[in-house]
Image (cartoon, rainbow, N blue to C red; front, top):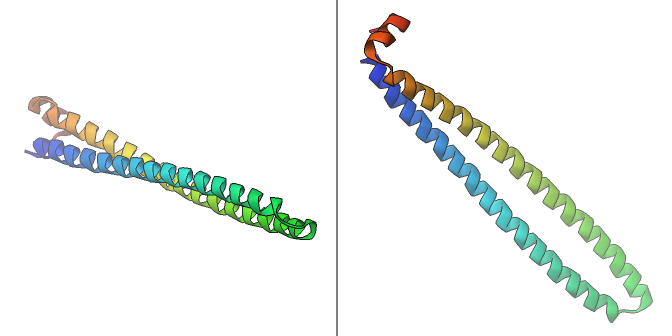
Length: 125
């Protein structure tokens, strides 16, 4: 009887691992979408900056260049922080999912061992 419950537990743990893996894929999808949006926004900003600087005086152009450089550095730092946080979260999800899937598969295998062998190996009935 215990042996059949090991199979059930293995299936449940396997399912939980797969759900975590789906969550990791979900994070990857949204992170990739956010990265593309960031690149698109940066391209638009660069175009706008080029237009502004081409119509500005030399003194204003110097100020705009400094301002733009500061904005670029802040945007890059923020994007890098988001990227690193997402990668860290994805790594944790992936590792947890992998462990759960392997444990679930092993429990299912143990649950399928012939009853006589299971009793002989474990001493449990």
